[in-house]
Amino acid sequence: MSRVLPYPVLTAALLLMWLLLTSFSPGQLLLGAIVAVAASRAMAALQPAKPRLRRWQLIPWLVGIVLLDILRSNIAVVGVILRGPRDHSAGFVAIPLDLRDETGLAVLACIVTSTPGTAWIEHDPGSGVLHIHVLDLVNEEDWVALIKNRYERLLMEIFE
Amino acid sequence: MTHAADLPGWAALLTAALVLVGAALALAGAIGTLRFRTFFERVHAPTLGTSWGTGSIVLASIICFSVLGSRPVVHEILIGVFITVTTPVTLMLLARAALYRDRAEGSGNVPAHPARRAGALKAEQDRAVDGGR
Image 1 (cartoon, rainbow over the protein chains, first blue to last red):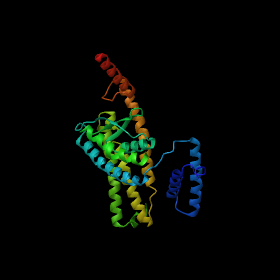
Image 2: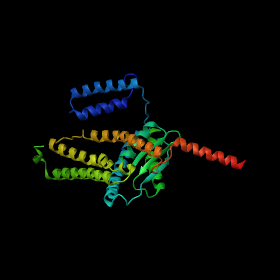
Image 3: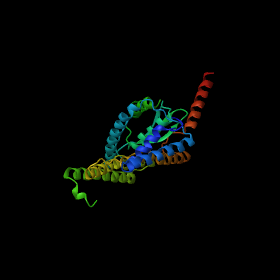
Image 4: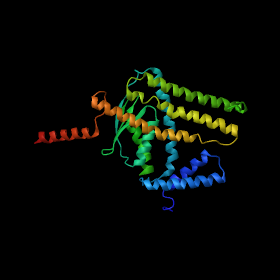
């Protein structure tokens, strides 16, 4: 199994993408399966670190709260823009992360970046300190607590 | 879109509203990019277009073509997935370049370089040890 399909999740995702892009038919299923298996075996040649999914059941929950938070911060940032550029205080926040898993950090980067109002600036892998830039910074502690309790804890449960 | 007249009223209204919301978010992002004063503030504005700006237009497309085709059309979700996955790459590249510039010029209120900050901390500890002696 592991020799034929080194990355089963990647293979499944590629096949799903193929079927979404083409209309579903047995021929496309076969063609998509061939492409997915070939591509994931090519990926094995690069020998990337294999992410472990410990509790994948939590992923839909994570996606849900992230979509909701992004919607809320969209509204907040539109508010900041319409109020005028001077009526807010932007600043950097340093967050000491306990998350070390590379995939988890990549997902956190996607979350922080996709959320308007927060931008991933720098992460120091040695100390685990992450700097983000916050557009409407009222209280630094709130942002540290938000990232740590709302996202980091879930990501650590999923990936570590 | 020549067969758009086949769309029932509720779907047409929903599609139109979602497209307008998406366009309005992209416009707000453009205005924000223009009005903010510093690089790190500007970086936030276009994110409106790449998050729910894209999201609501994707939703509009899904609703419109699913109703027209009488079957679920969801491949637009891939657009959203790819935008979400690729945006951090360019953003981090730009942010790090700006951070490097501000640190080199000593301008802006940017956080210190991690290695240098660790060095400063160590120097402080050394001083404390020296003071204790």
